[in-house]
Image (tube, rainbow, N blue to C red; front, side, top):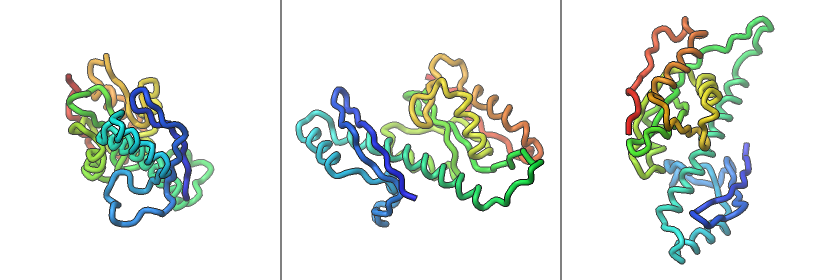
Length: 214
């Protein structure tokens, strides 16, 4: 199911307006499937404008690469999450009218940041955290560090995003600047949510890397 996006690309004081991107159009081949941007296509005129900015010395190639990788990675994560949720709902039998409890989702929810910006934290979900971090690292100029993780899947991720929505900067990134221990704060919020799944999650211990510092 293809989906279109229109975004503005800001490079310092220069803005490329109304850039059209598409996800899931099936135009990409297998050659670059491992790239974090795989699955998302961008209009050629916008690419030409970016190349003109690089040629003029307005921006560097690394800045352009970093911007596009972060944008397309965010789109891919959003669409994969929505697609996974839709597929999961389609595969589930219709719930009984009396059953209101959401079943436990054992996929990993994680919190990552960098040593340079420890209070800027991404809260995401993945079946394989190591593989997800490897993919995200391609689009990051600094080393990403796993700060916390626990099983809980999309329901837990959605709950944490809602709890910390006031601190959201963009996508799945949140600014915990000024908080004494962001990791513990995330952990405690997650535990509050997971109480309803105590029987299912009893054998699952969360990973806490310790408070962010910087």
